[in-house]
Image (cartoon, rainbow, N blue to C red; front, side):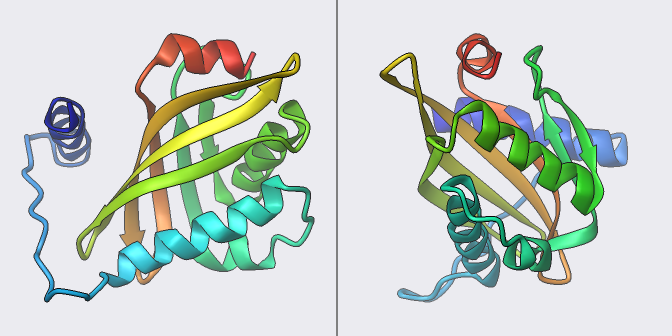
Length: 166
């Protein structure tokens, strides 16, 4: 399953940037070591979780995002778009929080990272009409100078994702 999602996705992303298929290689670390870009995503998801739970301080989030951050959300729901810069990206996060009435949570499952990219496997959940609804996504992040410069959100089930965010 993972190979069927991640390999075509990384090929498309590499092709979109370079005009040709690019193969990304993950560099193994010594046992017990965590890549700095994996730590960056861990810090990002902690700050984002505090924000989604109702916190209003975006200082930590802003510090983890490049000034020219770009965030890609596919689909046909009201949140589907391409967001540019801190104001738009944080506005998108705020729209998700408001839509889910602060019940939205991201549960990270795994992070794969190298010096330029990180891939996050995660489950999302929110309460809707008294029911807990869940979905799975892949986030593909481009990292520049220790900050998140771009993110492509890729839901496993686009129809479900659109339904939950509509």
